[in-house]
Length: 340
Ligand code: NAD
Ligand code: MG
Ligand code: MG
Ligand code: MG
Ligand code: MG
Image (cartoon, rainbow, N blue to C red; front, side, top):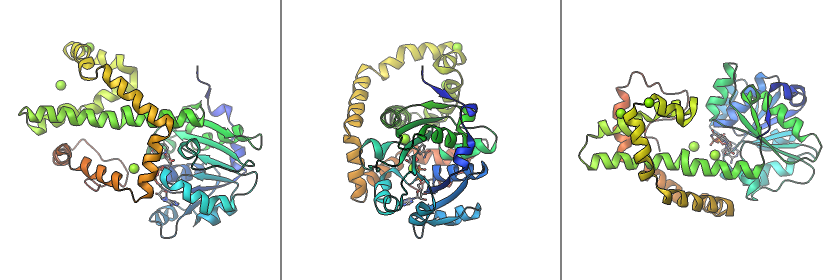
């Protein structure tokens, strides 16, 4: 059984006694900075020159500095730039200004696990990874709740790394839900696998194949959209509340029987073999290298794949249909339809 932590297991005064620099003000960065601030922590935000996020952070009353100056003032540095940017930000602006005995905080273990960042021996290296998008991390905190976090210590130079990590997890609201103890290796590999095989890659491909199968057979795209995409949220909500069993309990017996006989035909054992191959590429670092090499070259593969996904016919149908859905409310993010 995993080791779990709650608010009573953490001492907020530890992080409240430190000076924290949050580097990056995107999905996670804005949520961590604002939640820390509202928990009474001394926070500043470090951003690149000309960053579009500067005004947003300043409008929230946060102090914004260059990355180097933010790190110089701080003894806890939270690395929330995009994973592919962290290596150069760390090398050029964080490492030269990092005080001995300081702590580095990550929300995903990618750069540590795959060796793109190697911190010096004298600093604590910890991870607090919320298991939800940053906008939810902020919204739940404001509503008095929290998004569960997973917590890990890679390097305990001071002897206080665990207490600091739990204190930080409490300050962003994560321990109102729960903290789960893990390692950088387990978090990084399982997070990449989950998003690639199931949550993002697997689900996206499943929806597209379902839509293509129906429309190629002559069914109307609008009807296909409802059956293979729109209703997914209702099903996922049931799974989230009570597992696959609750979903099967709630749907009709017809749907439940179809689940048993056709699910394993669509997702057959070869899919599990494919998943094992994806996991092997994650564990070996091959996926990380492909991603970072492409990013370093200006992301040609990434941009081409994004454009191809955006051009799939299900996106155009969905844009038209969602205009008619009075009950679908966009969440409070900066996402712009069709902007990819
Ligand atoms: P993001 O892309 O939303 O935002 C990154 C921010 O970093 C930008 O808004 C910008 O302010 C800043 N930035 C960009 N390039 C920079 C540079 N070169 N130097 C300094 N700042 C720069 O990123 P994100 O999705 O919040 O991811 C941050 C970290 O959190 C990653 O390690 C990611 O894996 C992890 N994480 C993200 C989520 C999520 O919901 N998005 C969930 C869990 C963990
Ligand atoms: Mg993104
Ligand atoms: Mg991830
Ligand atoms: Mg139906
Ligand atoms: Mg039933």
